[in-house]
Structure formats: C-alpha cells, structure tokens
Image (cartoon, rainbow, N blue to C red):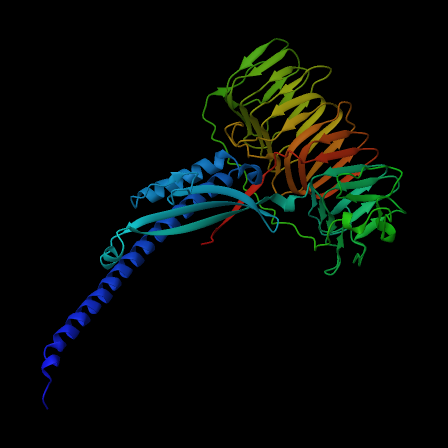
Length: 527
C-alpha cells in the first residue's frame, strides 16, 4: 500500500496533540489531587478548631449554676473562640475572631432546638492551592473554602427543673406532696413532681404558673398531666377533698383569683372561660436522675483550743475545738478559717451576736449546730459552710443571715422553728470562690441520701424566711406548718415527702434561680 505524499508525517501531529492532551489530563489530575488534599487538610483544621471551641465551652458550662443563661455571654463565647483559634494555629492557620468575612474565622451563636438550648462554634478555613495546568487557563489563584460547626447542647435542669420533687413511692407518711389544713403552695417558673401522689384538702391550694404538676401514681399506668382534660388516675394517685383547687396557668396575662377555680382536678373540669390552648401540653411525667456529688471532708490541723466565752466581746481563731463553741451573750467573732469540732461537742450561739463569715464549721463526729438568739441578735455566716457528721442544724429563735452558704448533713435534721424570723440563706453562686469548702455551687442544703432526715419549718414569725438554692434531701420528710411564711424566692426542694399545713405558705419563684446544675453537655459536630 502506498501513502500519499500529503499524508506523510501526519502521525507526528497526532502524537503531538495526544501528548498535549495527555499532559493536560495529567496536570488536571495533579491539580485536582492538590485541591483535594488542601480541602481535606483545611477541613481537618476547621473540624479540630470547632471541636476545641466546643470542648472549652463545655468545660465552663459544666461548672455553671445556670448554664443555659450563661451560654450566650462572653464568659463562654470568648474563651470558646480563643480555643478554636489556638487549635487552628497548630496548622499555621490564623482565624479572625468573631468574623467569617475573610473565609478564615470563627464565630459563636446560640439558640434552642426542640426546647434544648445550644451553643454553636462555627469555623471557616480557606487556602490557596498550587496549580499547574489551571494557571495556563487562568492566572487567578485557586482557593478552597470549608466550614465546620460544632454544637454544644446544654442540659442543666436538675430534677427536671421542678421546684418541688417528692421521691417517695407510696401515698402515705413516706411519700407525696400535700397541702393540708389551709396550707398553700405557690410556684412560679417551676412545676411539681411526685413519684407517688398529690393530696389537697379543705381550703388548701397548690398553684403552679407556667409549669406542670405531674405525678407517676402508685400503679405503673397511673399518671396525671396538668392542664389536660384526660387524666389516668388509677389507684389513689389523686387525693382531693371536694373541689380543693389545684391551679396551672401558662398564659402570663391570666391572674390568679381565689374565687375562680382555673381547673378543678376532682371532677376533671377545666375552666370553660379559658381556651384549651392556654393549658400546658400533655406529656408523660419524668424527672432526671437525682444524683449529686457530696462535699469533701476537711482536714483538721491543730492547734487544740478550749476558750472560755462569757459575757464579753471575743474573737476566736481557727483550730480544733475540743469542748465545742458556746456563746450566750456579747459579741463573738470567728476569724476566717476551718473550725473543727471534736466528736461529742456542739456549737451553740445563744443570745450572742455572732460574725462567722468566711468560715467552715466542721464536726468531726456527733454534734449539733444551733442558734437560739433573741430580739435583734443573730448570726452572720456569709461565704461559709457547715458540715454535720451526725447531728442537727437548728435555728429556734432570732436571726440568721448567710450569703453563699452550703449546709451538709450526713446524718441528722434541719429545722427553723419557734421564734426564728427573717432567716435568710443563699446558696453559693460561684463555687468555692464565694463560699468556703465544702460549699457546693447552687446547693443550700445537702442531706445524705443514705440516712433518714427531717426538714421542719414551723411557727415562724414575720418577716418570712428566705431560702435560696437547691435543698437536696431525697430521704427527708419535709414539713412546713404553724403559720410560717417561707418566701423561698429561688428554691428547689427535693425530699421524700413534702407537706404544707396549718396555715403555712410556701411561696416559690425560680425566675432568677441560683440552683444546682448537673452541668450536663453534649457535643455534636454538625458539618
């Protein structure tokens, strides 16, 4: 076969074109691999930075009293962004703080998902990619941009957010929540939960604004949901005398009128004047696990002290008090520090004016703490704590004021009685920084769950007591009685049985609560 003269050498052109195309594909493959590697590296940097920010935020929120309200503040957001920026620097990437405008930055935002508050850490990383063939096509540099969002879910409500929780599982002297004999319970921004039942008699009332009143009943299928027309009572979970009113209000424009029953649980009839949309949405009752770490024990380094305090102004110093501490008159000042009380000895502040700020009163064995001052005399224990190993805490007269205090009772009882008036106690709001160990952030009273206890608030006089914080006593029988007014502005009470009777008023509002938080957080990488 003979080739035409014009066809001679064409194979060289074909080979040349093929070589160019082949080299182009090769260059594109190299450029693509470089871009992929750069994107993968940037994504790793963005993910690591976002997770580092989330971890930092989580660490802060786990120690917060009210993490949900803290999440959107600079106290959390600024350190979270700083942690993300530090993480990115490991990969030689500088993130602009609180801005994504340059495609290299980190921002923090917060919101709510299905009723659960969250904090997002959003990172963006971009970089230039070294290209070969693409440079021929366009002189513009090639960039890759990636994003990552880590979300910190904040689960902070202890005991389901309820202000009253009864842990007892029987509807008797060992379980339930009761308003009896003209006793009144008024709750705002927190509901009530009983693992057994509720009882209301005569002119007594239980009122809950904004939250549910729920109980699990004695039977496995028995539960009541506040605001619902349908109630599965079973057994004896609901114990109401006639039309004793139990109110639940979710509309802030509604006001409580003692002459109007917003809902009569005894006959399952909702107030027809209020649309059903104003009542809470039915949901199965539940409560989170009631676990709390006990405070640490204290060491008691010398010296042994046996002061005599009689009718004069006295200042004493930290140490081990082998005869306890008794003051019946004058003015007594406890210098800041740890006061160890020998086993079998007590602390009794009688008619003295006592200043014991920034102190720890630690009972090494059996022994009780009491104050029976009178008139204008009283006790001040700001930024302090009391640790009772086997004994009682009792204020039977006079005044006690204590900001940032935790009372721990391993075995014993708690009581405010007789002429105690104007008792003001607030739980620590910032951990041990504003309360001497063994204080617990948000906890006013901790009663060890392995022993039986009682909480008694009786026969108080005006002004009413103010107790602020979580009172954790899951094995205690709590009784408020005898005309006392306990204005517990920001309190949460967990006890085996809770009873308000004989004209007592338990007024609870956790709108600005300083309560214990489990500090539970969940981190999720969204993208």
